[in-house]
Image (cartoon, rainbow, N blue to C red):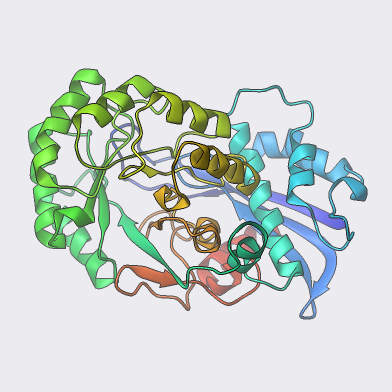
Length: 388
């Protein structure tokens, strides 16, 4: 088996939305296609990858560092023992050759983009959906037939107030979602509470509404919001402080009785180990949101799951950030607690397969081998247009 070509491009996902920390007016992503000489169903096997929203395109790192390493690696360094399929773990070692420990902020994204494409290939060569392949190799042999998903939105729009938020939440319910998430921290506390109460009124149950501060708050602000939010009974309070400020997360765990969530901006198993050691996370309620594609890919995500198990957490505590099909396949194959979804933003990278609509807050997986990108026409139009 050989890799015959690797292509990379940058795609804009810019929009006028904002959270408590950034706007998305210049947001973009990297997309890659890895071509092989293996033929399945009459076509050469091609694997696709892209990074999640919130981290910009990694074109420089990909083109100048990581893609050249993969191109130059001998076949023996990247294929499995049979020689008939790629080995994601060997490829991960190739990509990380001469990389010092630490420094996880941006290179983790570049490696994750390539890792996604590699796993797409591995599953296609095996002629299996990725979830089935993962269940066989790393799980109990069976997949979750459907995955719980929630609609992430509730951003701050420049011209949209409470009425716009209500309409957005109602739209998510009409699409089949039963749980939603919204942004906080970009407005004064009283205004945010008004927004949250409006969302709860539309969704119908506070336990189905989560809030996300995107790491905006200091210690005092975290306390003020925790006291105001505690009586509401929300689904979770996400990323109150800086993701590496474990003291703030520990403070929140000590003072906020409801579930908390964090992890989308942790990019290594070492980061997750420190979260477990110092942040006061509670296995009976708290959610871990590490995003496989932003954190060196599935190879590293498996190491993260090992760390969580060592500290008494289950894979069901994990609901990955990103809202992409890669995380959805992982969630089904490794039996995580669910998956994020972006039904109205970051198109066409958010959302799932065309053949699997959201039903009562859950989604089935497509039956195609690989990650299932080919069952999302708008995404494939972009990938083919930019990578051919």
